[in-house]
Image: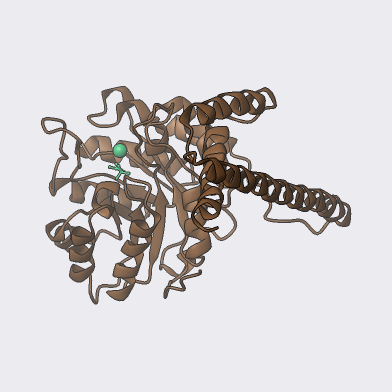
Length: 365
Ligand code: PEP
Ligand code: MN
């Protein structure tokens, strides 16, 4: 289902945003000193690709006694950096006090952080404070992979009259081990784009990766998936940064990263390309039809097993058998280039459906 919010497109936010390439937001994770903010932002602006400057003023840290942000004084520093570079500036707000202070300082754009989006009370409080204020707001996905919670924040802000809205995908925390700080779970922002098609979506590779060496690949992937922009943290001396030192890049490295991105076309009018693509899509359509037919056939066999178990008074679930199936099928899949994670999820989905079929047979003669 599509939800049509009342959205003002990025190009009508009142800034000079590009129309032919993604929106680029950069700046330090945290404002630390006046010089650090100014030096970093001036150097970033030299690259010419930056459209907005960011800095964290109040930092939501997982544990206390970490650097919790420089506080209100930092608003002045980022605003000055914006004036010096002629760029709009954005800061994170987590409560009403932050909103009022940011508005008072003339901050151009606000963003709501991942730890705030998780809490509907906080989001509502911010939305209420912004009632009647014409300021753009960007909303990061909640820390946990909950699409409805993310979309709910947009509905709350839109109801309060905020139409200049954008989403920021910063990955999701997970108990599973991963090379990422926050797993991208691309299917979630993609589903967001499908359900809220007029909300621009920006990718934040810095918080997804948590380390510099992965940034380029994630940024490129976001471009290939038609994201509307990127937010990348930059610091004039990353190793000395008071927060997120491992993921920040110097303005020079930021420029190299942006220059390396390949911006592919949305589509092509070349008839040969279109013809070949059509052929490949037909192959996919056929493969999908075969897959569905095979799955249906498999479920029919499950039903027969169900009947057989019922007639012999045997329980549906036999854990040993299922462990064996997962192990064996995963091996076959992995040998053929499918990921272990995909095999596991796919097999579990099949198992669930199979149990449903067997249950139907066992409980209704
Ligand atoms: C940040 O952008 O510095 C930040 C705190 O991000 P997140 O809310 O995504 O963790
Ligand atoms: Mn950060």
